Image 1 (cartoon, rainbow, N blue to C red):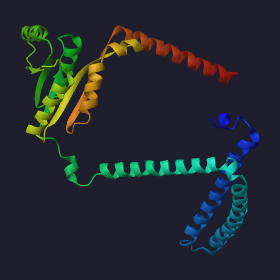
Image 2 (image 1 turned 45 degrees about the horizontal axis):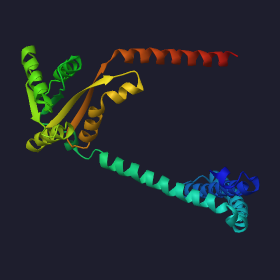
Image 3 (image 1 turned 180 degrees about the vertical axis):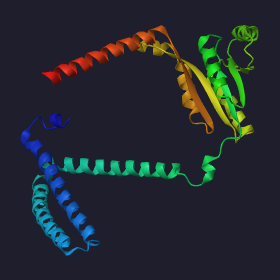
Image 4 (image 1 turned 60 degrees about the vertical axis):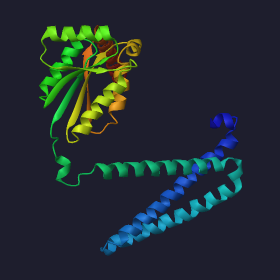
Length: 281
C-alpha cells in the first residue's frame, strides 16, 4: 500500500524508515536508562553500582544524540511522510495496550478465588441430538452412555410429522433403552426449539450441567463440508453462549475422510523428504 501511495519513490519512502529507526534507537536508550535507574535503587555493591552508573551515562549520551536527530527529522520531514510512521506507531501502541488489558481482564476473571470454583455440579443432564436412526446416532449414544451422566435422553425436532413418526417407530423397534424426546417445531425450524428446551432444563435446575452430544460427519472434501454439518455448526454457535451447557461433537468418519488423511500423510512425507534432501545437499 505504501509503495502504491508513494509511487515507489525511494526518496519519499526513506522518511518512514528514518523515523522508524531513530524512534526505536531513542526509545531503547530511554529504556536502558530506566533499567539502570531501577537497579541502582536496590544494588549495594560499590563496583556494580559504578558500572551501572557508567552504563547509564553511555545510554544518556546515546539518548541525547538519537533524540536530537529524531527531532530534526520530524521537524524537517514530518509533512513529507514522516507523520505516517508516527501515526502507525500510535495506532499499534494503543492496539497492543488494549490487547494487554483484555488478557489481564480475562486472567482476573478466570483466576481461582476460593474453593467454590471447584464445586461439582449437582447432576449432569446428557442430551443426544437425533435427526435419524443411523450409525452416527448410535455412536453418539454409546459415547454419552460411557460418560455415565445422571440423566440421558435423546432429542429430535419434529419438522415433518411422517418422518418423526417413522423415527419413533424405528426407535421403539430397535430397543435402544434411552427415551426419545420429540420437540415440536411449528415453523420447521431446528435450532431454536433445541435452544429453548436446553434453557428450560437450565432454568428448572440451575446447578445442573447440560451436555449436548451432536453427531457430526468428518469429510474429506471442502464441498462435502458445505453439504453436511451446517445445522450442527449453527447450533453449536448458539449453545456455546448458554451458561452451564457443554457441547460435545461426536465425529463419524466418512470414507472420503480416510482418503483425505492418506493424501495428507503423502504430502507430509513428501515435504519431509524434500527437507531431508535440502539438508543433505
